[in-house]
Image 1 (cartoon, rainbow, N blue to C red):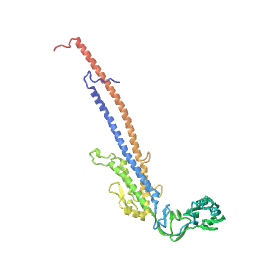
Image 2: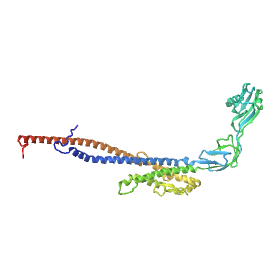
Image 3: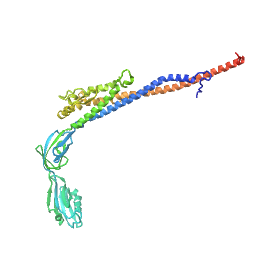
Image 4: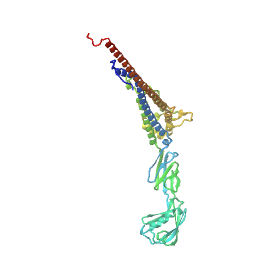
Length: 456
């Protein structure tokens, strides 16, 4: 440790002198530290831009998705007759008249009303059930209740394809699925149990198919629910006989929602960039946006706007966003739905061209300028975020690299400054010793000459 002596012999304010010299040497370091702080602020700003482009990219992915442009809705004028939903993109838009004359039904037969469902019946005997899947023998014992007999029939379901249930105190026997090809025969093999339960020996039950017409074309189905074989891409559920009109149409609401989500993400990014590049007062540095003059910060809005406002010449009617009610909002790089009626009309009456305007593909991989405007914008945003070559990644990586370089330089300069300060204290300590030696020698000489303590 260097001994710090401040002007004991020389009378100089050594500490103030050294402090002044150190402060002078600190000026370049402070400048670099300010540059590091500026870099940190810039990095945060560009991080916000990167987040904004990520949000924009996500909205574009949704908007450009095939699913977004293939969603369709189902409606029925009489949902008590038929309901349904669109399950495939192949469903054709249009209105269909569906008339149901008969619902599909299981093969079934009902026994007679019994005294109880849970109490012992005191019936005995056996009967066979011959169904589509095979035959089973059911044995009724005197201690069985109606529930016990039902359980025995259900236990043989895998062998016969027939099951049973109790309604009130009546046993119902039926095929496990509906359709005209479902049937079963019940035959007494011993005792009176079958007759006691109210069934006719040798009786056969046969199921029914759904009988309907779609636009006067006869159709059938072995079931009433989840019927997907009548109208391509549509699943129907029939609940009653009668007539209903069903309509399949484009789900414009979900498409508009995706467009609105994209517009919000786009405008938020453009607004943020506008704030960071704005000039409120050219003479006041604090009123000049930190990204003012940055090439990339000005290029992103300019390029994005150029993409969105271009004309797609392959379309005959809907060539630009303006043609479907979307345009600028009076702000340089923000857009909005300026005419919702116009957008809805375009989606309802010229859907394919609207789809082509937004997400359509170019005619070849080398002709990307024929892509839809939002697909082109998606590709531009993807380039901005692409590692090593994208503008944002290069910009942010450059800031990080510069900050590391500056911090390394600051660290070295601070070490040099510490060394310099130590050398100054040593220098002034040596000087003080020299002055002190001269003073002692001078005093000795004066004493030797008798020149000390004399009156003037």
